[in-house]
Image 1 (tube, rainbow, N blue to C red):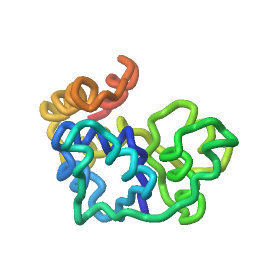
Image 2: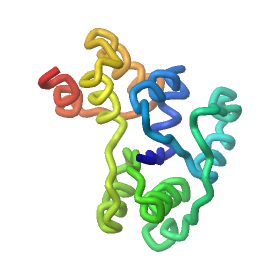
Image 3: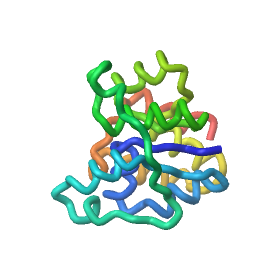
Image 4: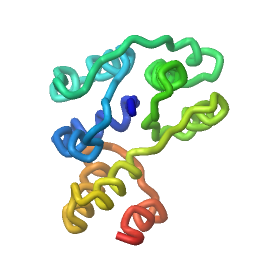
Length: 156
């Protein structure tokens, strides 16, 4: 399966220096970011984002026409359009972009689900996952509600 990631999710893993863990969790899947997402990373003031490259994460072309009609970021629009065209699973955390993805019939999950998958598959130990969640929030600039944090650790 192809997994296409939005800027928020990929940048959180880059900021926390956990790209190798992301690749390990997603294992057998092809991980893609769009050119628009890569451009958003390159516009960052942080060198770690601006200079990002990883041989296991491919960069793909995609349209971003949905950005104007749905008032979402170009990166989010390109992820949704890539997912639709390539029957890919999208990683989207932004609430408005998730709503657009749902309207477009796109299968998507959030970054919290990646952490939960890592726990379920044994790629992350429970104690390490708690630290990862805190790093993704503090350093990665993601927001996980208390309910989402609780859900991540349920049944694990």
